[in-house]
Image 1 (cartoon, rainbow, N blue to C red):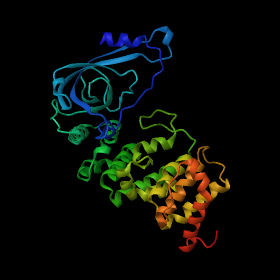
Image 2: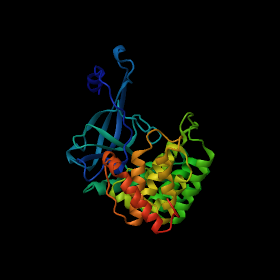
Image 3: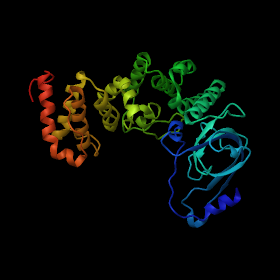
Image 4: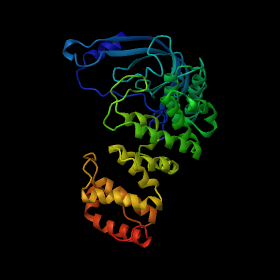
Length: 367
């Protein structure tokens, strides 16, 4: 442990701090193989940087005894790993960083770089044959810990960690939390139920939650985070729970996004700064229907005429392109998808075709 920390203490290069990665992203079939191990933290150590590097945080590391190998090289069983977490934002609300804590770790195949920390209930975890099996093992551990936990802040953290892994069969474990008096715990449970079940009842409940949150908070105001610390922007906190509404989806997630159209619609009509465009309009471009076409085109016209002065500086060319692509999807126009540079050269042609479809369908009466 000491040798590891001393070797890092002399490094003066800039570093990037990373958070606890989502389990479904850390264990992803198309990425390099992972090592998933269960065991116990047997020691932690923190050494302040020398004066020449005083602006950097302390070098932090821990020792971890591997009791079981869920995925990866089975020869790691019984070994003690020495790992650096200087640039890793340890999820304290999920698991304390201290000796004696039992958990699972998702690491690179060589057991060097830490991606994800997962609390566990069992002292020994079963072996999985592949990544899908490993994610199932970790999901069952999270749900088992959730059943034992009584503190709302940790219950929320456990639900957020488990949500990307959940299926419809897990909803009975979540329903009690959807009635919690703790607003952030209730919100996390609602988001988990929407994501895992895609049921209209839970989607409607989430829509009401989102609309009430938007009505109660100004985009530029600061609020307390779920742990009670002040000074946080409200909407990034909101979408920490409703993470699946952020439009950076792969093809599988785009198919699921169709279920969330009522949520995108509520956000889009809120006109709350960057969120209105990023989650709202961005989502409707992929999921909206004929009923959304007039609204989408009005947003395009606002951007085109530059009448909208309160939008973030980055809103512009790409958003106009995405809206025309959304209208193309709704009316099956077949507009080609371009890069920003090529789109600008063909924008007027695409706009005319979108307007022709709107006129033909009697969505608008005139240009």
